[in-house]
Image 1 (cartoon, rainbow, N blue to C red):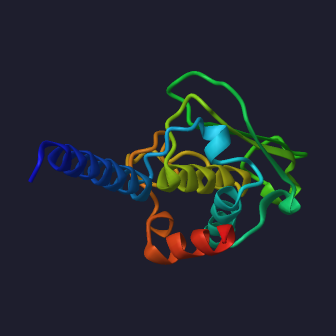
Image 2: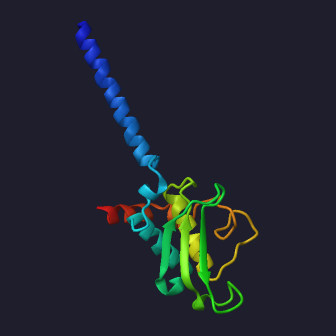
Length: 164
């Protein structure tokens, strides 16, 4: 094999390795775009997360009128949900909740399972659930583990079908 042939073979090999690494990164979900670009509020991903949230809680809180947005917050916060209620207890009468919002933090690092779980968690607040003291639970104050419904192959297929 001549010198030019070896250089061409090495170059092709490097291109193949680079392509394989890029494909693996895409499959692993290591998209480096900022969260609002990756997960726009009207994106199939956010809509799928909302569907999972409604199914998880068995209710569409706030009469289905929930405004989702991206808003900068401190680094340790993934999202904040807010609402108004006619009762004095913020969790006592979720049917009367109005002006419901979920503000996702663009400073938090979201992949699909985390985004989905955080949206389901925030829907939980809007449906009348306060934080749980036990760590690792869906309504724990701090995210540690993705919700199973946000990690299954069925969910991933549904998400792909919405984008095609």
